[in-house]
Image (cartoon, rainbow, N blue to C red; front, side, top):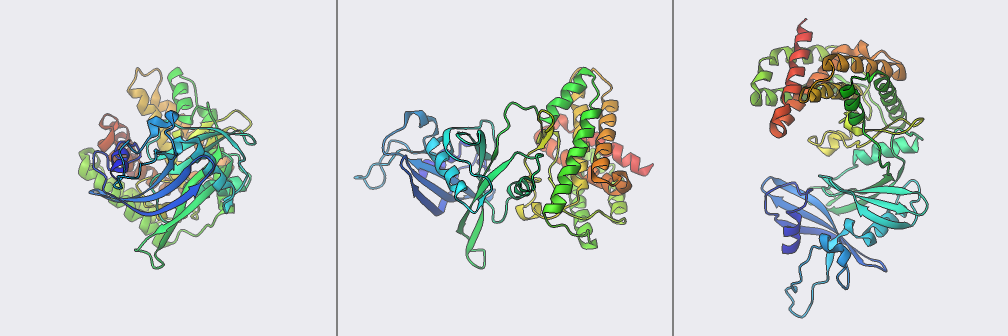
Length: 440
C-alpha cells in the first residue's frame, strides 16, 4: 500500500492534509472489461484526525498508458514477489475505461432512472476538493457528469436521494438525474457486519452557466437591481420545497425536534463566542432570539437543500431559469442528520445570508453602489417570490426565520475565522445587526 499512501497524500480530496496516510484495505470489488481491470477499493485511513473510509477506484493495464501518466499510482518497482511485475495502475476516474465501466454499472443498477448509453469520451472536472467528477460525452444523452464520492458513509447520500426525488417528479429545478451506484463494505460496528452507501451519481451536465453568486455580484458592481432575479429565485426555491414535500416524507416540528435545533444553535454560538470576542458581546441577545423562536409554532419538517447559497444555483436560459445544485447539506453535519426532514426556513435563511455576502464582497472592492440598500432590496424581493410560490407569508414566521438567519451567521463566523479571517467581518456585522434588531 506504500504507493497508494504516497499518492493519496497528494490528492485534494484527502482529508488529513499534511499527514501520512495509514491505510488498510477492508474490501475490494474486482471487475474486468475488454479495456482494463477495474478495482474498487474500500480503504480506511487511520489518521491522527480520525479514521476515514475512502473509495479508491483503480484501473490496471497490461502495458503503460502514456495518456494516463499524470494519474499513475504504481511506480516501476516490482512487488514483494521478485518474479511478479507490478501492472501499471491508474486513478480510475482519469481513465476513460473506468468511466465506461462505471456508467455501465449505473445503467444496469437498481437506481437507474434514465439509461445513459454509450460513452464516447471522458475527462475529469478540475478544481474539486472532496469528490471527483467525470464529464462524459455520450451518444444518446449529450454530456453527463458522474460524481465519484471519495469519502464514504453508511446510509443514503442526500445529494443523491433529494435530486432523484425532484427529477423523478419531473422538476427542471435540478439537473436531470440518470442514476446512482451503491456499494457495500464490511463494518464491524454494525449488527449485521455490513455497511452500504452511494458510490457514484450521474446527472445532466450544464456547462458554461454562471452561478447566481456571479450574476448577483456583477449586477451589484454595475449598480443594477437584482430584485427581479431575486424574486424569481424565491419562487424557484418555493417550487423545489413544494415538490419535495410531495415526493418525500414530512413530519410535524415536535417540541423535541425544536429543542434539538435550539441546542445545536446554542452550541454553535458557544464555539463562535469563544473564538471571536465580538460575537461574545452579543451572545445574550442571540440567545434571546433562539428562546423566542422555540416558543412559537414551526412549519412542518421536510427534506430541504440544507446548505443553500447563491453559489449553489445556476442561471440557465429561460424558460428553465434557476437550477439548484449540491443537496449534500452542511458538510460539518453527520450524514444521517443531513438526510432528516428539516425546516424549509433554513434554506430561506441561507439565501438571505448570501445576499448579505454580496454586499460584504463589495466592501472589499471600490464600492460602486450602496451595498446595504442593494442587499435589502434583493432580500425583500426574494421573500416576496418565495411567499408567492409557497402560498404562505414567510414573514409570519419571523421569529423562526430570524433564529435560523442568526444561526447561519454564527456558523459563518466560525468558518471565516478559521479559513478566511479577512472576511470574518461580514458575518460578525450580521450577528450585530440581527441581534440589535431583536432587541428593538
